[in-house]
Image (cartoon, rainbow, N blue to C red; front, top):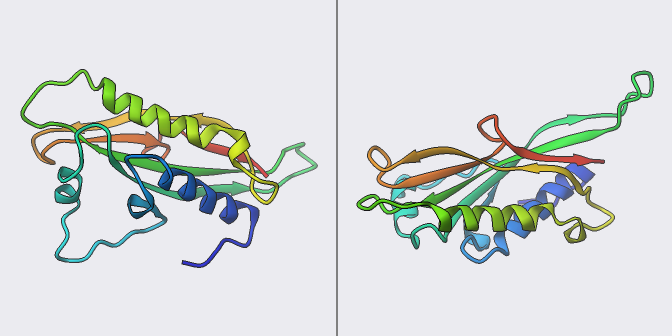
Length: 158
């Protein structure tokens, strides 16, 4: 994958790098844009191989970019959206505290303005929400939404 050349794509590169540095995600499970798994791979199987509630897969992409408009006094912003997919034990109940602690730790890492350099934008709004819990069809997946499904997201000034 090529390195970003605009502030938006450089920031997206940094978001992926930060997520990949989180224990429980690692660089091999932090994906940017569209990730195609091989025909022999099954995403639910990959998630099922993880440690319950403390490991996950992360994917992020740019959803929108808005340029400055001096006539409307509008600052330039862009939004990066993402999802975090975590394993949930399918055969037992859970208060999901560990899953939430994991997701909130990731959010803290992504929202820390000290983690961004002058080439990248810094986040002005970071939100995460619970999108989906599936222990039947998907055999124990929790999906946390950082804007990929319409709730939450990461908004940056550029």
